[in-house]
Figure 1 (cartoon, rainbow, N blue to C red):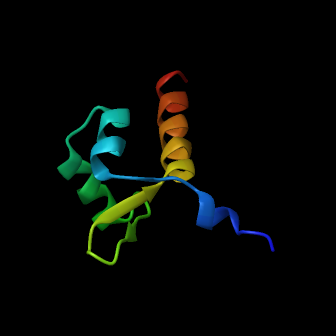
Figure 2 (figure 1 turned 60 degrees about the horizontal axis):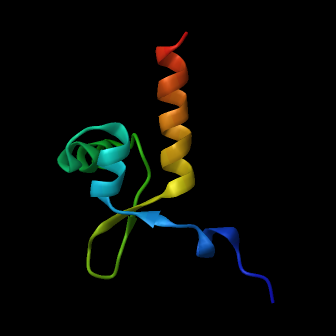
Length: 67
């Protein structure tokens, strides 16, 4: 039996994402609400973010800053 990659991918909290981008966690929540970054809702209603998607977004922003 193989496990889908999505099932094993690390999920990050808004605080962890905020630390990577050096912004407030509320900013990350606004980004998710605006569709700038995808999020998953836990059964308790909390947002979680796929690490691969967060890193892709961060890489894109840092490469734009160096262009």
